[in-house]
Length: 195
Image 1 (cartoon, one colour):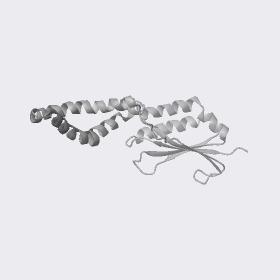
Image 2: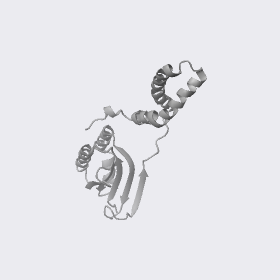
Image 3: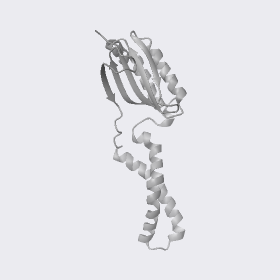
Image 4: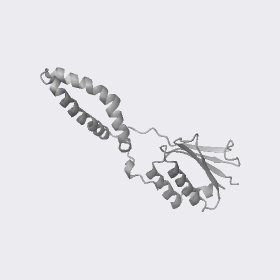
């Protein structure tokens, strides 16, 4: 005997995009409603303004669920989330006659929060260069009037002593945050669309 299947997906989206997320969710629900066996959908958030969204949808049986999950409509809908910056971190399938939030008779959990692997070394080196070169030029330009006559190893030491904490605690973290999309191989922020 087939049993209803509830799917719970945890997704994240940067705060401040509630309207876009709600529109995207409504579009998915509207598409899913077209499929036989659809029993409903909904979402919850831990708190207002949270970047975490727990989404639920329910189908009458596994065959109906599979028809939705392998449909071109769902593939199109999910691909549109990439433009928003939506990230899936956990998928859980519950089967049985339990309610949406009761203990399930069976559970299949897939955790998608793989720790992002280290970016390729050439990308790391590129980001370091983007910080190191302009900072080196600036610090050397500023230091030349003050240290121009100082013995070269001492002058280099002074520049390195200034640059190391600035690079480590300010410049490199700042640049890494701005280039994180590129380091992890995601679309550029300005290429993400709202719809």
